[in-house]
Image (tube, rainbow, N blue to C red; front, side, top):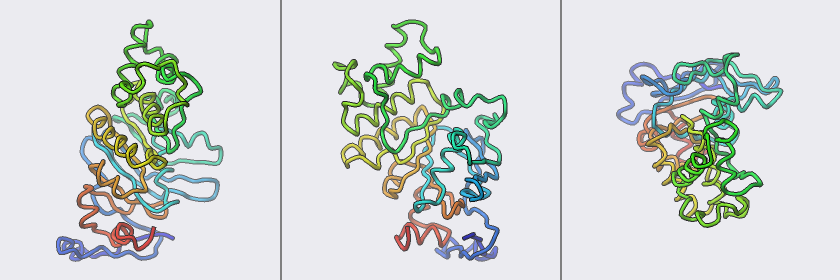
Length: 289
């Protein structure tokens, strides 16, 4: 079903008195809020994603700023993970998937024919919902990327990258005496932090996270959320989450998706306390989802 914002100009002006922009069915719609920002790190314009004949993302434009965390929220199947995967061309691996629109990283077209997807994914790393450590040692998991990209000229430099990455991921103190042990032998939360360390070992500019704590217990989840806040000092982060509480805790801006459309974007505090769009309000108050 398509969505259209049908508010008149006076109605929009009255949003300060908690009047919500109404929605109805139509073939056109317009995102509410601040989806475009000055000097973005990542910029997308008029993005459409198709799986065969089925359209999953509709005419979406969203900017992501330097050193900010943007949370993508919405019901299951709304397109948030599909949109996230388009930011480092992970959808290229799906034969029936077709992506249109403009994607720029620091002004550079990431879908240009001259762009190597492997090198792009070093710049735009990804942490998946389920931790997926390689069947290698803890050390070799983190060293894998730097080795294949030639980021270390000797073993001492590689050691420094591994240790620094594990420290940034908040894991080094827990594993420093067993770096040669299998990464798969760690707990679920430790495995996810190992995957984060593996991601940041190649010095990405952007980190994409697809529900990184959904399979973790509350203690491990809290550690991951604290880590996200620390990583924001050095990285731009986009996170997909089903937990609105998590989005509220870790992000500066939140984008709400519904049926493949970007409905509303704004400061996280505003989205969760005074959403401008009726659909957004209905979702965050639990009327559907």
